[in-house]
Length: 150
Image (cartoon, rainbow, N blue to C red; front, side, top):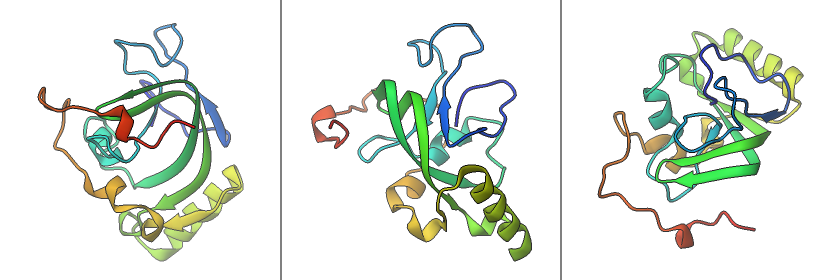
């Protein structure tokens, strides 16, 4: 997910965040950047989507490699660059098998990455759904427990 008043599909397998407020993305105090989550943070991608106009769209998850300027907070990551490694579609969000198959084919043709189902997505990604809004004030994040630094 990326913050844009009128988001379009990622044009390539690699993407760079751009803020429409004319500053580098991500930037403190703004919602810009490419959003991702990692184990140990307090939100999942469904948690992010609850706060957007896209909460009723068909679900797709992408495993991404983030680089450049990366912010880690209680809700997850906002990154400057991300490259799609694979995509998983929530089969139940599609009206029928033919539509799902078309979506898989279009995504593969665009990104040339593996396209899987939700059975390939870890539970911590899909099950950690909060209603909306920021994490509670008492929530903490221990960066030492996160396996993100290489």
